[in-house]
Length: 101
Length: 198
Image (cartoon, rainbow over all chains, first blue to last red; front, side, top):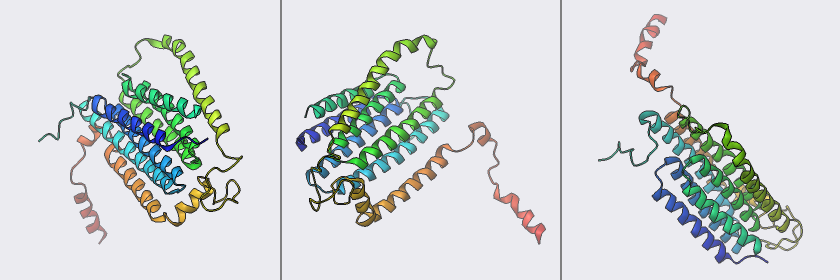
């Protein structure tokens, strides 16, 4: 029997907030990026669940686009982490305050 | 239903593991388990192509990117002070976790309505598995992607190209000590060559 969609949406919300907690609480930029990937995955899970609920594969297409954008985001974010580490030798996002006004 | 609850609990546990670990390498392992379990959840939602893409792109490409950056940042720092004695302690739980994830993947594959009966049919009820009118099949996804959603697909290609160019411009430069000695105005050197050719 197919599971009701509300369980998938609740699971997606839980995963989303675990990711948000990671972004807020952690200071390591790599773990912050991984938490952002968790947030993307939560969005994808909700999209795919709603796609099955309405038997409409536009949700699948959108999840595919989100995965692509997540790949681009991870590449650019990791490049920024590498550049920041190369310049200042730290791995703490609170210490990177070069753009503070 | 049991499959969903087991997968949900494992998903949340692995996500919390990812967020709470102190070492980024342990977080990457948690993230890998999270991605594989989420792919199995996609399979329970009749999303075959998203399942494949999740495995290939996320746990194939993005995680390798993370691992490479961790290796790049911690080279010369010495993150393993205890030496090779750590390995035997890690092997047993790692094997258990990997086998459990693999078992769930196989279980999800066996339980998924792939060959038995298409539970959700988008247009008609007479479709074979793998044809374009079965909801969630690869043919369904592909025909929708290349007909009605063609423009977003092409914009995606553009976004990926912008990302690649951006990464090369950000981190693809030479070592920092070599950039420091680079002469700042390089195009001015070419002017006498042009005049000599005349």
